[in-house]
Length: 479
Image 1 (tube, helix red, strand yellow):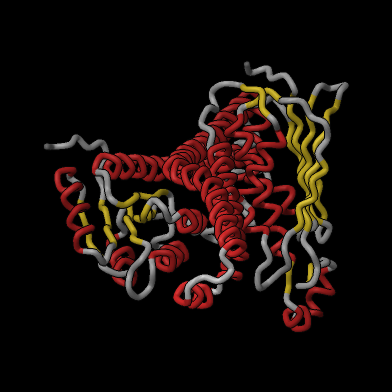
Image 2 (cartoon, rainbow, N blue to C red):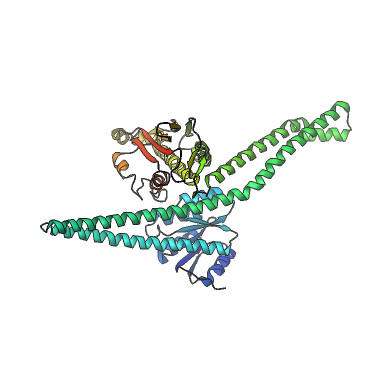
């Protein structure tokens, strides 16, 4: 069957499994796209530098360098850094998916492959890539035109006031067009990424929710059955204290006293772990709510807690720092009318940035000694390995203005005046390549101010941390 294709392009498929290569090649055979093949990470990097494909389908597990390392090297190379990478992985590899997105991947294709899904995702990212190229070209043309206008304006300073006014008006129109193009690009990237992330998270949560509930429900019965069997055995010991020799040998062999003591603990531990997993699934489903077209009354605290649970792995202690402490100072806040999904995204952006700021401020003792003159002269207070990073979350209601105020503060690195001045610009980021896009705060401000009619602002000083404040009307005007 011939499938109509809206976009042309070159696709690089990287997989060491011949069966996967055959399945994907057959799926893309009739599309008109040019297909390139690589069987390992080094080959993928070499082909990407030579052929500059429009999209790379990259397997995670490969001999030599794995998919994550290959992705990181591709993103660090100026020649290949803007090529969209779609990882190919199993549906259950949740941590790998989050890691891949943080390295710069734009999407995932799950195994076993669904032909229609593969084609749909590739078409979508080809369209985004082509549109991005066109936007870049348009931006360059607009910038050249603006520069030309400014040159003409300088040379024609002695012309009449009417001509000067016309040039100023034209310059304003061009600047406005450039801002509109930037905003359109931000919105397009935001919608596509949130759509992909929402589908991914919702799919994972749905698939594992039923088996987890099945295990959780049966563990209570298993606990009861275990208790009954232990009680029965104790009755046997009471009324038949002298069993046969073979039974006594078996009792000694399995250490029945330890078994009766430890087995209920094992069941309880399994129950606790499964319950924790069920809570995580609930948080994932709550965070990925796609009903962002309708205003709903929601519990703000529930959204914050769900986001914190998803970020729990980043709050734990590691080899470079202690555990990041989260201090919750929740006030009595009624349900707020808002768009749940986008608001959860704002919480995710601000909390993730707070963690990044704290991690940036941590230094090892050896690093402190080696760089002491530079650190001392900068006037910036860095956290040592023994210090504790803290994130403080406060909520309250401002009765006079009928708004809820949410404050998220950290004791991280803080921001300089230059960073604060540029922070609201789309695409501006202080993070290294592959870790930040510069869209987080711009998107968050758009969600709070344009979508909810609220306000978002921050206070920050170098070495003193940063505090973001969100103000949302209790009753939405968007309903």
